[in-house]
Length: 421
Image (cartoon, rainbow, N blue to C red; front, side):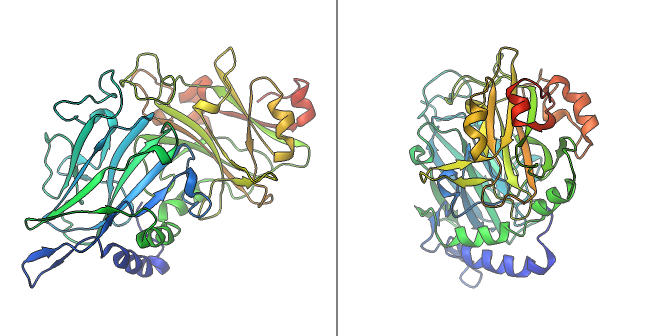
């Protein structure tokens, strides 16, 4: 993330400042911090919030909780919790423009396998053990290399403004309802305040409004073709959404829904992943990546994921992660993007994983994103090894059989084996 849209930047900063103000503020005249009655994790982006907060090309396998804070040279944030029963978790800090950063040589990202547990606890991403062990991390303006469980509060040279702390969990067992949010304590000038949780508070709406104007969303949209009669091929894109998860890398293509009766087939070799949604030590000799998914979104801002409300009032979200992707005997996936009316016929075809076009916006251009998370160092075909913003041919050369190849054909041809991606 670089900048907000110029026309919206002032309004976005104003609304974010107003939203974050209840969390903590310093009174220069008093010489000490006045930590107001604030609350933590004021915004949630997860499968259960997609009905109202659906933007920034989300992945329905992920749940995010966001804590905005006012930057102060003397502010320390302490986060204490238990390792969740999930495939992945991380903490990240971001600057006021929703960007990751490095300060004093420390990245603003802390993935699960880098978190040191409490003395009597086990981190199940470091060695085999049950989830639920205790940990504590610190977000500090004076963070320095070598400190365990520390994230920088703000980029070097920044002493004011807004920052964000995000807690991410992928594939939590039992869904986001089962995730116990960590406690947050703010300390400034010797005064501490443990915040009450307030998911969905006023800051949530403010952050959502500002994210809709995020520059990374505009940049991603500009990287993909605005019109094409056929798929142009997947290319690596950077800045795939605001608040980027640095553990992910993305391939993307932009597609129009084809003529009635036709479908889009996406085929490639699937990377191996840890078994099930539970924590497991990482790196894992039997897994290429920690997680992968394919999601269908609307290309136009604010970049919502497809979300079709079905006649029985259930919802089909346009993401399929590795746990619900069919893999054939050769280790390949075959995603087929079609209409909800084609779903039953497509799911009857062996090896096919159905992914929907938008029912509400059938004529909109769709963005298809393939994610790879945390590749093992021996997996040279991961998206992370493709040069950023390179063309489809370069991506295919690096990824080989793991590159997603695309074709358009009729449903009938696919059913009779006459369509090949």
